[in-house]
Image (cartoon, rainbow, N blue to C red; front, side, top):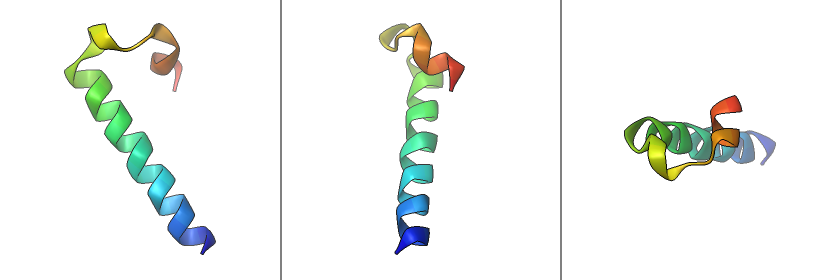
Length: 34
């Protein structure tokens, strides 16, 4: 259960980072600190 939750958060984080690199102008600067 905990592992599944961790993997889901990792996936969401990776997806968010990929979106940030694809569309940097659409994200606030705070996300860059992640």
